[in-house]
Length: 88
Figure 1 (cartoon, one colour):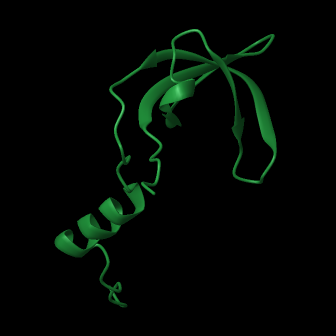
Figure 2 (spheres, helix red, strand yellow; figure 1 turned 180 degrees about the vertical axis):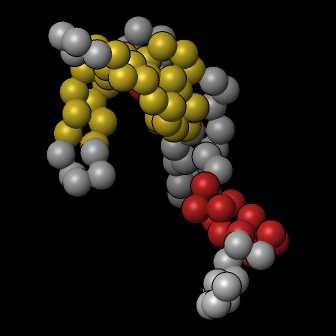
């Protein structure tokens, strides 16, 4: 049986409170990536943040980029991953 893959799309989201407007960009499953859709996001600490509105959605993809691997690769190529030398 063929495994079903989830497609993801890059989306710009915004959340309005009484005094502020917070904007963020994230990858959402394509079924939620519709302009005007209201979504709930999980925060780093595991809590849920409600009332995020999708402002724009890009093309969907089978696999979003692995940013952690991209950053690690960049650091290796540029030497940023090397230990710092002591002294002045």
